[in-house]
Figure (cartoon, rainbow, N blue to C red):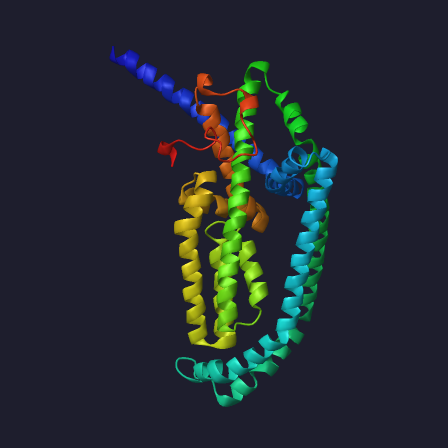
Length: 375
């Protein structure tokens, strides 16, 4: 009896090990292909993220305004590009206008705050060394001209890749908005007929979770940027508008981005305005972060993405390793989509509704939200 149990246990263990190795090998191949094809994968993923944000607007224009889908897609894209151009123009003009004030405040802060700090313990710089510090910085820049030039060339090459990736993302986004459902139906044809309905429902639920994620993240980012931007303006920190825009962009990387962008604002306040204004800005940033983590994210983002904070942090870290900033931006949405897809496939076939009853643009569909036990 015992040898039979031992053989049975060994058989189960070997089957589990074989399945684990197959899954690990498949994941390794997928990650390898993503890294090798990231120039294509990242723009497509960004286009999918933007499609989740803009698809409800296209659907509203088609269903409520009775516009042709092509015209609705064109209007939404042109309107989005125009709005983005206006915001970028406003931020760049505010940055250029704020540079003289920043330069003046930096000089004053160097004389009033930084010089006494460097002259005292533990640094104890001599007055001659402190007075010669700006000239030393200029000599250091001149001595490293070759490194700066090579860095500029690398940046130019990166800018070329960015421009081509942006063009590809825009091209893919047009077809996602205009022809998204036929594309999804075509992809389902690669599956066996008996699995298409369940996979279709899972895919629609996954896209609905992405719609909810993008919508909630935009709201959180706007609140973060407005709250911290008002605090910077009241304290008198230079470049308040560009810093608020940086906070807005950083908020799209959950947990990590808002902290880093807020730290930049605190650092600029410290260097340009001194310790007391920096402490005030720190209090503002902490207050806004508390509002985000205890009110906005549970109410908005918690409904769209049921992920543990550890999964978010590990996902962001893995995204940075695989594809830098773009990977950090796309990691959490990808995890949210995979989570919704797997949850849908794991439920019993009897509980799976027909694909026609699932709205891929409604993140608050009760069939899309996770069960209370998953929260």
